[in-house]
Length: 622
Ligand code: AGP
Image 1 (cartoon, helix red, strand yellow):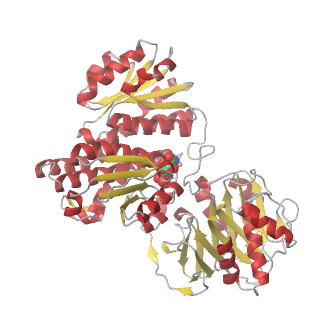
Image 2 (cartoon, protein in one colour):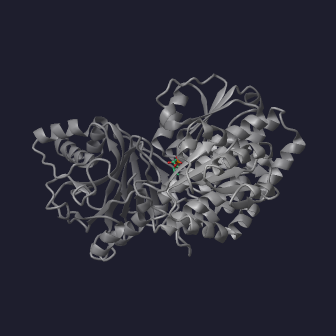
Image 3 (cartoon, protein in one colour):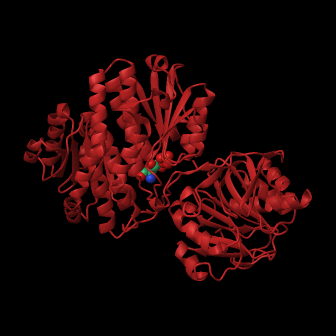
């Protein structure tokens, strides 16, 4: 969950590393550090606790560190408290003072992931005379590389391969060897890392935005592979030390999409990018008004024979699965189960033979989702991944990938990726429904038309965002919020509630409106804010009556509904209307005011909207 950047070329490395790290700061941010090599001089390591700007100030934005080869890291603590000593890079020797300063170590490196057996390895290294200065698992792995490097004759490939065989866990490792100036060595297992090349320059990063400004030509380093980076060239090796050939891929993302472009926060920018994310996702697969079934990797016969679909994801990705469940079951009449990846992977997976497992992930690197995918594959079940990041682990391992076209998403709280995932779920549902004959051709075309109309409707909601801001300003001191709804409205409540708690730190819960009476209602007292989402005509009266029940116990009610449902004003204190659409797709519209509420509440409380405390964008550890 940390961020890694490396550079080797003809320019000064430190400013490039700091710039790249600033694009990754959302991944982890309790400390940061860089190691820079100037020719054959030993690496100079500088670290600092706190935000990246502390490191930038300390090094005059990298200008005080000379050298054209270097590695950098932003840390999200797993082993060892956030401190300068525990910050990366780590060195194989005895580090001076708190971990900064010139070092004479052979190996210096940064790491993303978790080394599960580091205690046992540390014991072994202590016996061999190594001394440790930090509490991290990373220091152990760096020293282990040093141990094998010295034992087996100064060969980085061999030393790294031997280390990889000994360690258990996940890692993206980025190393420099004192006796190999002008080279960066990398290795990975179950932790993301990409390598970019440009004219005479080579970059490595744990995530695309870090290098997008410099190159879009990338190599994807596979699991249990090693690479040697020199200016403009990369050589790949397997664990046996044999060279592997790889093709370059081109990233289609635009460098500007990872910039704020005048917005105060990435979250607000990404909220406004939702119409484009939807249009781009539709345009990628809908040709002449139709979807080609092969984008989902299934034949008509296979769709007709599907006995079950299991949708797996975490957080918001899971929430889009809940929406898809309602839509798919209603339209295509296929039983759908929606599973939290972290639970699913440790349960007896009952997956019928003619079933499909759909894993949903923005990053394509979420550890639990990746493992759930692997287990489904091991059982011989067909898998489809709905993923935003091209070339990510989930995208590479699934039988088939449906790429959402949201572009880089920087804010920890997902918005545009969520919206694009909903579109993927709708397309899957209406295509399967057509193939299975549960909707007519006419209905299919009508629903397709509705999907294309969603972006303009979202624009319309955004035009009126100040009204939400005004309402939220009045609620700035709210303590608890309850989101209630039925059916798809309940599914969108899950997302609205998550948005609120993750960025504004306000306790909130999403409840199926009919469930309130079974316990939660006791929490309602005078002034408790309850937000009722009511977009489904057939469920309107039912949810309104649940809202009346909480109102009579003192709740302050906000209603979120579609234009036309004006009767809601008889019950609620404040109403937000969204445009009408096919009722299967209302989540795409009703989620927008809920995202805005979370955003404005966070801003009004003076919080760090894009980088909420304790959270990271990609959860690459379980
Ligand atoms: C949502 O705002 C969260 N940041 C989080 O729940 C996220 O959706 C979840 O961690 C899954 O991530 P993924 O889509 O990258 O797999």
